[in-house]
Length: 441
Image: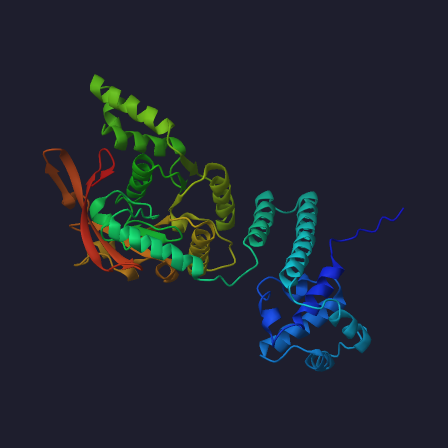
């Protein structure tokens, strides 16, 4: 009995693919599959060497033929390793036309991915059995590899489909039938200032404010209103509040009842009807929470799971500086790394992400309020963001910014859309923050 493991491969497809590269004008055949396969996708070393030479020849824009191949192999001292000139001609003559080149390329890639999957699973199993690696690290590593493999191999994308989509979008805009993919905050004066009328898939909105200014509550308003008014499922990564506290804030916001009235046993029957109605409504909303992450990679893994299982279409991260990072990096470098990875996650999952960020109180007291340079710890936060929304008390202090109208007490909160990739930047406005019930207007 032969116990030797035969790794997935298709040598005939490899040789057919190489042969196709020599059929056609110049580099045309190779160019058609250059985004699908790499030399490392080949199983036989001989075929890997030959294809690597083809890549080099095409990279210089030269014709791919037996002369250029032989010269390239000679320069790399690989002629003997591929079996000599007779072996080269044997591979070149495998097919007569290049018509099957994409079929061969996809087969070669498929076998390569199967081998890579086997290696990944083997390494994960060895790490698990050693009991020296954190399970979340193993899981994140495997999941990252799966995502990488599922993203598709055709790196260059034709603009044709997008052009058709935009043509259709523009016609609908003119006719009034257009429905934006952006997730609205449903605070009209804010949505009007955002380039896409909300936060578009793949965008990161950085929401920055000093501590105790209501930035978490504003983000919760976004999630609740998106769920209520647009049926948008969301996830909230909260590293400060447990789920019960978040839910209680939703209840107060939805019912317009200050929960302290219930604790003090002065709530009316009408208050309790409103609160119970809010609880019933919340049970039917697709809002999910995450409260423990070991790293940004672990957070990404949990979010991917929610996208698959719950179909979430918006993510809120509360807040950037609380996400754990490795001790080997400086704080600035770690914050930059986390910021980059969150932007990559937005693009990978095509999600709008609201990323909360802490800023110092000093900027809020400055004439003109907060500026982009007030973002703490790293300038990369601004670079990675598509939208930066800065918020601070109008008078520079919470107590001094409190007002009263016929509906009760509120805090005047200034905001500035300081960065707005798809719209006008440095546009200011004022929120009314009814702090007792956690509502922003």
